[in-house]
Length: 529
Image (cartoon, rainbow, N blue to C red):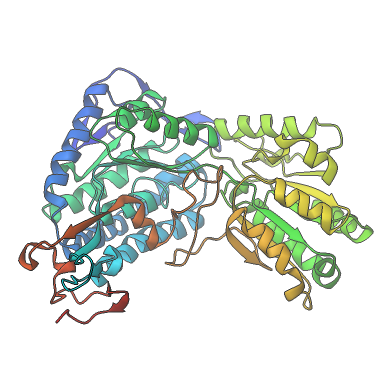
């Protein structure tokens, strides 16, 4: 049974009168369950419970937090069948995609658990005292990372598992030892509720304070606004639109005590295709690019939305072949009405500009659900440079081709781009070193460079950088994917001349945790003599 309530420190509550329904994207029909938006009192209770929990969890050893993450993964896997069925009814993403996403979700939790058990994530740095140094002695200074405190996580619409209730942002914050208050996405509230049951079970099984996790339901802006404004909150994780991320960023900055917001907000992910690549494997790139652009109905933050290629007969043939390939793929179901209407508006604005040509094909098999036809837009570099609005993200199965008359014009287009999550280059087999200037220019605009590949399909690894300059994210120095995402929710603290027995174990002379530390500029696991 679905309760339609918020989970406040393990207790299911619905004190308000405002409610909403989930909607089946395939039929556009609302479900029967009423989901009640959290009240101001419930939001306050959730954050205060999180603050109370932090008084205990901030002192938990990494192994205790790792046990909790492993237990959470087990509880989620025990509910896998129910989660997949529920999420499919709310997102239409399909059981195959969702089963894979569930494995990614539990894999993320276990990856953070392994990170905690190894222990070096605290980035311990020790500079021992130099009492004989002149003209002044050097004190003993030791530094490591500690958890920030209660964190608000805003669920994403397009990843109901991997970037929502128990997804990457939540996993990173929980691994850091930060209690989490999740603002569930109104597009999949029943899915959020089922995840909350699993995490609550892990909280109970591991003997954690119940305020270590809460879920707030809500379909308007009020719940999120009140959550970010709460004085006991310390940070925010967000995945969504530029408009939403900017609003949260500004809201957090305007607080009497500002707090950091780590927001991923959108990207068009430029793909550069050289003349040599067109000549050598144009047909292969057509198929790979079309598959990437239509994956998940194009509803990926890493969707390749902008393709830059030379102005030539070969390029015109490539675009025609791509158009046939893409428009020949059956259109998928979009997540919700907001995505559908937003896509209609953004593509309409782009297609209405002088110098932009639009190609679409309606699919009669998908008219009942939320849908948008696969669309190809074409223009030249001059038009693109004159119309900054063409850099707007089309969140769906849409590709904009820009023809450039030469390397100089391509360089101008690349330098005009706002920040992006990714940038890709497809080149010929003999073009390696000659493209170094292109690679260097693209590097300044993106968080991840891709060589002869496609941006969709993000690996959850320690080396992955899933972020970029504004407006891809508002914190280019961080990542929201991979184990280094934990650093967003940690802060450095230094201890000066503190007795060894009063130091955290990670900083003690004997290195009882056996972690890798930087001691007097050398990295070592050895104890300090």
